[in-house]
Amino acid sequence: MTIKVEMEEREKPMIARRELLMGAAALPFAKAALAASPMGVATGPIEASWAGLAAGYRVPDWFRDAKFGIWAHWGPQSVPAQGDWYGRFMYLQGHPMYAHHLRTYGHPADTGFMEIQNRWTAERWDPQALVDRYKAAGARYFMALGCHHDNLDCYDSRYHPWNSLRVGPKRDVVGQFERAARKAGLKFGISNHASHAWHWYQTAYGYDPEGPRRGERYDAFRLTAADGKGRWWDGLDPQLLYTGPHIVPPAGISSIGAMTRFHDETSGRWVEHGPPMDAGYAARWLLRQVDLVEKYRPDIVYMDNYALPFGPIGLEAAADYYNRAVDWHGGTEVVLTAKKLLPHQAAGLVDDVERGFVTDIRDRPWQTCTCLGDWFYNEARLRDRSYVPAEQVIQRLADVVSKNGNLLLSVPQPGDGSLDTEAGRIVDEIGRWTAANGEAIFGSRPWRRFGEGPTRLEAGMQTEGAAKPFTAQDIRFTTNGGALYALFLKAPSGPATITALPRSAGRVERATLPGGRPVPFRQDGGGLQLDLPPGPGIVPVVRLDGEGLV
Image (cartoon, rainbow, N blue to C red; front, side, top):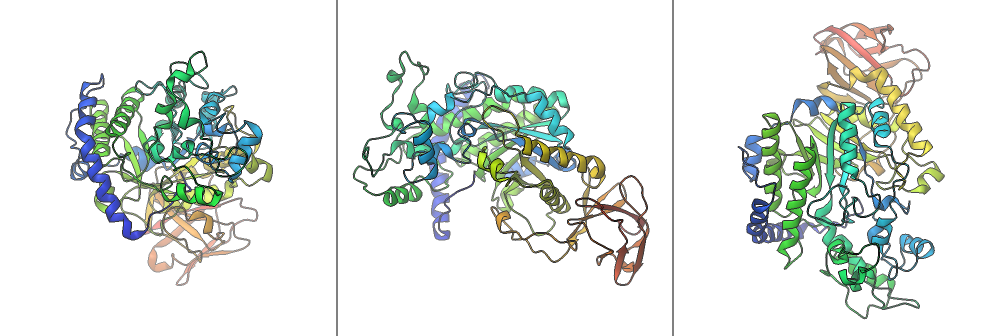
């Protein structure tokens, strides 16, 4: 996730056609492989087309009511504690992660990312304790990471031997998280990022363009299954992990800048097609995805993709998931999220806005995903105390829910599986707020308008970093149980006015804080004036009852 090199606008139609054609070419092979597998092809009413998904899918009420999920975006890239995309950037000379790797583990020609994966021991991981803590924070669903771009399946994978039962912790991470979530009474989700491994990992086939080892290829370029004899990875093929040499930098690149440009302009592009001349890659992805769904029966699947990967193969995966859900539940009581959806695609999936905002109420339920820090653990965040504070998380929750959305919050974990003290403190503070104010969030629906206030947000993915701080005039609205809720994104220092509530908008008869404490108010043609008590805490909430309000 993140750090994606976007294509030029004029290239997008060409790329989309390529993705469709390449997916169509691989489709017969992929469908035959699935039909021959122990899972088989799920039969049911949902057809594998955009029209078929739209016709057969309805967002389940549980998702609309849940509003808040917590995500363990946790895997072997947490081990170096350097943040996101370590498995790609450690192979880019000149990048800080390359320098860290050289100092800490050795040269990437000698110690590649597969060795880091095996150092993921999870010795302090207690999945039940984590999930219980997240439930206490207010989470109504929990998500585990199934496989990231580093291509290690964090579960008991039938079709990929590079998995967490053979490498690293020797545990079924997804399976143990799934059991913990079910025991806690939470809906359970899995994220799948594996479709991008084939281009993401191509830096591992490169070399240092400068310095004493210039020109010497990194581990992915030279290692084969035969090299593992007698070693910890005996029986595993590194080429299956690193995905094969699809976009290899040619020999003779002699500067760090030129090598970086090569990777940015080739393998660094965010594409949804598979590797050219390798139909088996997309077919294996389909098998792994269906295995994941069939084995753990997730309530929600998160695809780290713009729409779906591999054209019609992604549609096959979506239809298979929905048809299995019909068999499990008698209806499509599951959620499948993807990103940057066009209207005809959003009718059959749930749109996820990564680290970004929407600017008004959406007709269809949607989700934003964000993180307390980096997606993968970064020790600098703890050292610099740069985690997102609880107040900002709750502001985000209020804004998203007021616009008919859900918030999925990633809480970073170090490689040992624990929570550091600061992340734990923030999670617990969120829990204290949701325990007091949950009626304004859980099971709520948007009001006539999402809110009011001077702060303007930029719509789209990856826009949260540019957002200005909210003020006491920024207010969000929700409705629940016949009441209207006003959520002040910043606590007012004195009397507050809600301009959206003049007498013509409905008559306020009672204003109360959570717990029932009355709030003095006055309503006239200019709005509703509230005299909040001093020290109301972060994101104070006022319940409004009356006539004609909702």
